Amino acid sequence: MKYLGKIEGNTGITIAIIDPNGERTFYSYRGVNATGKFLNPPLDLFSNQRIFHISGYSFQDEGSRNNLFALMKEARKQGASISLDPSYWFSKEYHLLNPNLLLDINIIFPNKEEAKILSGINEPIAASHALLEMGPEIVIIKLGQEGCYISSKKESYYLPGFQINKVVDTTGAGDAFCGGFLAGHILGFSIKDSAKIGNIVASRIIGFIGGHKGALSLKELEDILILNNENELAEKISKERKRLKQY
Image 1 (cartoon, rainbow, N blue to C red):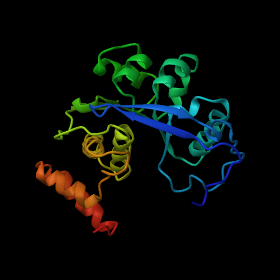
Image 2: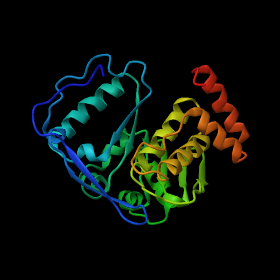
Image 3: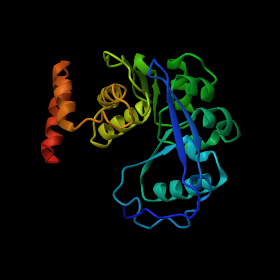
Image 4: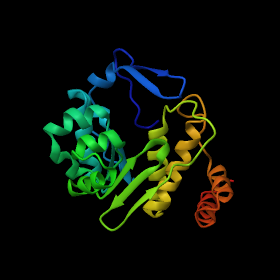
């Protein structure tokens, strides 16, 4: 709450349309999200912060884009890594005019279509390695129910999706995956273990209406890992849960 501010103008609105298969389509009016100006980032905004996560949608308008550049500059100055979840628009429009932007990105999370557009390559494995050459240190291509393909300069993995009985609403699945992966990454887990967490968290979100209802506690994550014979990762989660006193 410390850094929240009120901007005069129209509130942004997003309407999500969910089809019978749980797939969602967004219709958005950005309001002051597009026009509001963030003058000077507080000097302590990124102190003791590991990662600044951004969305490709923030590049869509000049106002929000300028705000984002100011925040990215401050994040880099204070030693935070930058992760990007690119949008279809960012991949198709903005990246073509600004390909060097990816040099400033440490971790990128495109879906299969976005990876194809960004790299010019249809096949996810080849696309991920092409994206690594553009600057990011870690590339995670989200493949929906098929899982994800993750790669870095040192290692690459395909991880199958975490199966659920029924897809109810895919709203927030990509965000949940990013959140799960980044949480594991911040805790010092390997990219493979971090992606496993991302897969599980995303699989829970799509089983409920809305983008937050299925969010997991660390204890629930630990229990799911044990049920799926991921005992080593479950033990790591257990240690972190106790360290953070989340019982």
